[in-house]
Length: 325
Length: 246
Ligand SMILES: [Fe+2]
Ligand SMILES: [Fe+2]
Ligand SMILES: [Fe+2]
Image 1: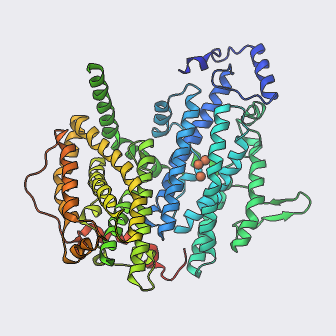
Image 2 (image 1 turned 90 degrees about the vertical axis):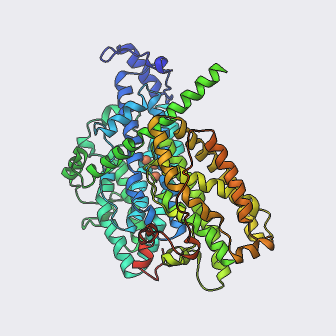
Image 3 (image 1 turned 120 degrees about the vertical axis):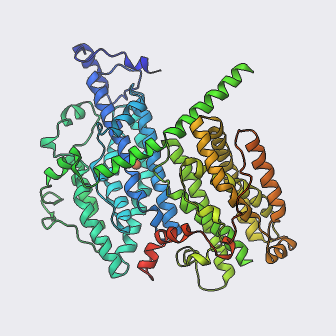
């Protein structure tokens, strides 16, 4: 199936002529499709980015699932279940999009389970009170939307189409999260304290979701040229902050940054320098929940092995019966 | 009448709560999605039934009060649904037993003389027919798949078989509701259930355990130890922070 997509030359051998022609297509805003010629590095970058995105959706189920059995009302339980289910669905579309580049699901998933592949560092933080279910929807899905809306116009066709589908569902995720925050922030003093606590813990990690600062981002330049990325990390982060500060004000909650201030000259909010060491440390695997998340994914996978084997064995027996008949 | 609806409501609520424990942890991605879908349907049914049960109580209680503020002895579900998830065969066998039951129950209730109950049943029937397709296929896959899967599902059958009796218990008040055409006849349900389950099991090497106790008590509020613990988790926020809006 995928062999047609693999017509590009081996790594390092991409001829200048082909590269130039490819760049012309990109500059003309043509979408690149699985069967088209593409530079090795373009393919590799996309496989890395799309599979990381897929892994993030799958690992991202865990912190919210932590509250599903304790959701405080039937309505909240239903909404949260539906939201987490959407994320699993996003994982599926994204793995399929990555498969069109010639990478197998098995390989990608194995890389996640062994810790070789990365996923968004935000999911390595714990969800400690019910308002975290709100803060995740509001801030984490909110940040994801900023990224994903930008990716709807990414140059690789299957990725761009997956993002269009994903974005339709994401605004519901953010709304349900903000709705939880409204109820908590306008609730009893104890509820409000939970909301503030959740915001305090989620704010900085959600800003880190946009990745390193542009001056330190290793993958940015070429990705921009190939229109895989269309906005820089810092631009998207600023856009997110500008959109989110008024929402926090409406809630009557305080964003944990004493330097956060609207700048009349730039028309944007100024904010403190992010503690980048923390981001790099969590990416390296030293976040509060890295081990726990990986253990959970591995346990689910290992516990499910006999179930998958049973399904495969049964399907094969059914096939054999059909062939005999 | 309230008692009857409360039993149906609690069966779905507690089963749904158990399924919610699987959310994000299914044996593979597509199955995780499908099981969460079943869970969503069943908790959706629980919500409708609890709203009706609250209405029948004629007090100030809401569906959420019934779910989150009753203690375990006030729950009327059968003990089967509160049994732990165990491995996937135990979850799926419990599901299969309940799916067969719900299909026949909702089929019967869709012509109930109580309009409200008939409406809920008709809406839920479509969902459970699909759930049954899935759980039945899983029992076949496990029973006919590998040696390990057969052994696991047989062990689950040995464990869970004894719980089905409770689904078909008769009480005086139930007999009265059946007479009025409101409730489904438990004897008829039992025959339909046994016919379907026996037919499926006969197509596999699975064997029904010959002896053992018969679960009872759930409908009177006499539960297994599992329910109290489950409620601790489910009701935590409403209990710890009463009189709050969520
Ligand atoms: Fe998502
Ligand atoms: Fe996402
Ligand atoms: Fe989302």
